[in-house]
Structure formats: C-alpha cells, structure tokens
Image 1 (cartoon, one colour):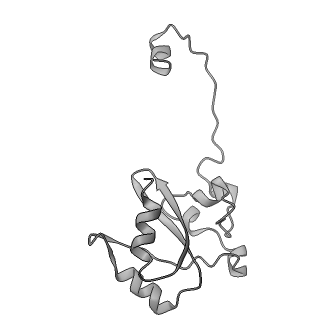
Image 2 (cartoon, rainbow, N blue to C red):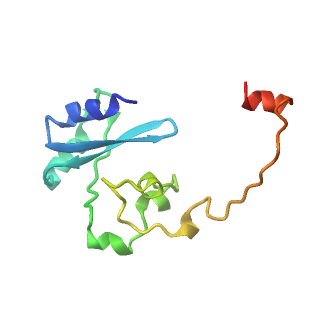
Image 3 (cartoon, rainbow, N blue to C red):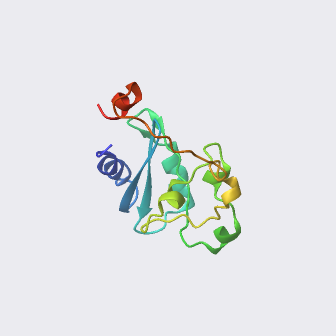
Length: 131
C-alpha cells in the first residue's frame, strides 16, 4: 500500500504532469486520486481510460474539477453509488476535499445506533480482545 503513490505517479507521469497522488483504500479495492499540475484535455482523459495498469487492470479516469460550482448542488456520485461511501468527505482531507453534497440521510450509517457492553477481561471474550 505504501508503494501506491510512487507506482501511480510512475505510471501516469509519462502521460500527464502530476502534482500529488492520494491513495484510497476501500476494503480489497486499491485506488488513487491524482491531482494534476494542469488540467488535462478530454482527449488525454479518454486516452488514459484506454491504458492498462501493469498491462492488466483498467483505469477509471474522471474529471473531479475541484471547486466546481456545478458540484455544490449535486449529490456526491460516490455517496449515491453502489458503495454509498465517500472517503474524501468522511475523512475531510484538506488537500482534496469532495465538493459535492453529502446529505446525512443518504449515509447508510446515519441512523445507526450502538450499545456499550462491559466485557470482563478474564472471560473468553476478554481473551479475544486483550490477548
């Protein structure tokens, strides 16, 4: 995982000028967001989508357009998509925040509740928690 930023920069750096790579970790999926030094043309983005990472994996390159006023009234595609999760909004990255809307009612854990239970440390469950 610590190799992702360098690996992605080496791979994409031959096609676009990269300012910073932000690795993403979502369960088994490994991905990265990349901030370019200058905007890429539509043709460049289409070309990047045709590349195979390590001659095996397809890339999904999109145009996030930070601070785009059109995003201020649009629900985040990550939050409204299959994952129902936007890491950038949840963690609140300073370098690359998500500019889309993140209504609480769309978050699957919005109405979640929890309960604390005392676990005796000398019990079987206590042995699982504190080996």
